[in-house]
Image 1 (cartoon, rainbow, N blue to C red):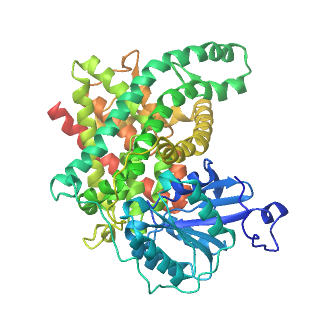
Image 2: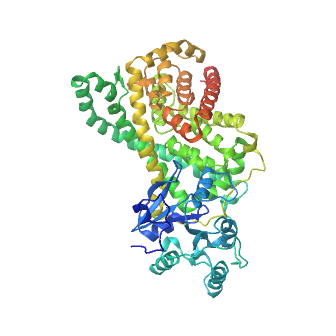
Image 3: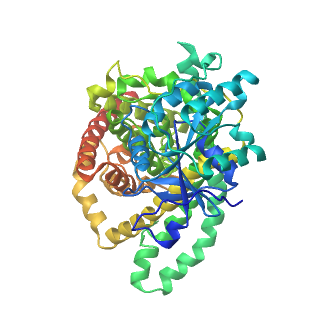
Amino acid sequence: MRFMLGEAVRTPKQTDDERDTHTILVVGKESVGKSQLISSLTGRSAGETNFRGSTVRADRYRSGNTEFIDTPGILRNSDTQTTRLALDALDQQEVVLLVAQATCLDQDLSDLLPLLVGKRLAIVVTYWDKVQPGEAALEAIERLSADAGLGFVPVDARELTDRDRQRIIEALRDPPRLEKASLTARAGWRIEPKPGWMEHRIAGPLIALLFLFLPALATIYIANAAADLLHPIIASWFEPVIAAVNTTWPNWARVVLTAQQGEFGYGLLNMGPFLLVWAFPTVLMFALILGAYKASGLIERINVAIHPLMRPFGLSGRDVVRVMMGLGCNVPAVISTRSCSSCSRGSAVSAIAFGSACSYQLPATLAVLSGAAVATGTSATLLTGVLLTYLLLTTLVYLRLTSSPQSRNSLNVLMTPSRPFMQWPTLPALWREASGTVRQFLYQAMPVFAVICIIASLLAHVGALDLASRILSPVMRLFDLPSQAALPVVLASVRKDGIFLLAADDGLSFPMTAAQALTAVYLAGVLLPCLVTAMTIGRETGWKPTVKLLARQAAFATLFALILAWGGRLLL
């Protein structure tokens, strides 16, 4: 399909290629179906583009010489970074496609038209299948169109017809400018689904938490089971290569590729298979589950239901979903906090850095606790349950004590669209929602992981890790830990898979009690976020706030680990 729209707006600095491209900025509130509409309209998958003057990426759909840029959903009167970027993007584009939701059409137009005065504009009204069909509804659309002097095209974005596509193309061919900020005509309806169990005052939050945590635990179990199956196979492919590098390659190559230090290798070849078979399946499954929640409308129901529970800890209902995303990978989770309000973004980032055990940390933790259970004759399930419960409780205490009073204010209501209709997600919609997280993992997290592998290899080669562990060995006694625990704690502050150093040969690598094993794993996991997470937080929020966050987290983690160490001696 080739779009023949009006002439592109030219500026003196545009290249010939840019002048030949007709760029249309797509704006609208959250969950109105922008991505579904553009994907159906163009028949293309999303690429990526940068907002001008920003490192934040937006989805780009190109068909012929027409490019649609899908901006983040606008939360009117909010101060989220994504809303600011969407509003800034309006200053850079002339032609705009406004996507409004039929179920709350009057409210969408009242909120967004004032932002678009002077723009060449066409309006697509989605969720038209939810409006009672008939002449009255079509006459209301005609009144709005005549009042605004713009083309209004009502559609069901999930089942876009050829006629719908042609009408949208015609509306965008040479769209008129919006001359007025408000309309006198009104649609006159507001349509919402009936309240369900999720809206129940008592049962709703409990059901919402169940929807959050059970899929997360199932994802961890299934992804780890897949990794258990794949890891021996992938490792067997790499073992001959690692052996050849260690025996025949020059020293500088061995330092980077294997960095063998006793039983543990820090290099790219050692850790590459681990990244692929442990981290990637977890990220993929989390992305698919969260994608299903978003595409179905369930995520907004969950957000509203759990918001009252999370507000005392400085988080909104939306933020909890982002923290849960960190269980797959901290990098896309931290990036997703761009959609947080400024008063809660710091709390969300802190929660991810402190309490979201990523797909590197989780399997390492489970392996150590399994070894501890064998060595001490206790239950691996019990140890895992104690650790996860303690991690959850200390994360909540940490947030309660460090979040701003503004974020905990009882008047801080959740900004959310009207209660969404539930619908079964289609496979294209599911993958479109999930693919952004997967892309962030592959193109942002993995390159940083590779850099961290090289850094850790060099630190191990020059003896910096051993030196740090020797310096910290006496400190371990404060936590009732043997001196050998210092190296795993140090390495885990660089890469969370360093927790594996606490276990070897299906058991503990050195004698510890069950309480000591819990303390060692907890301290290594939360003392500091890994370098990948720390670097991502630095890029997102600035390095000065990041240093403050790291110092604060280390202080609280030390206190909580001391309580676990000496309290655990009495209970375990």
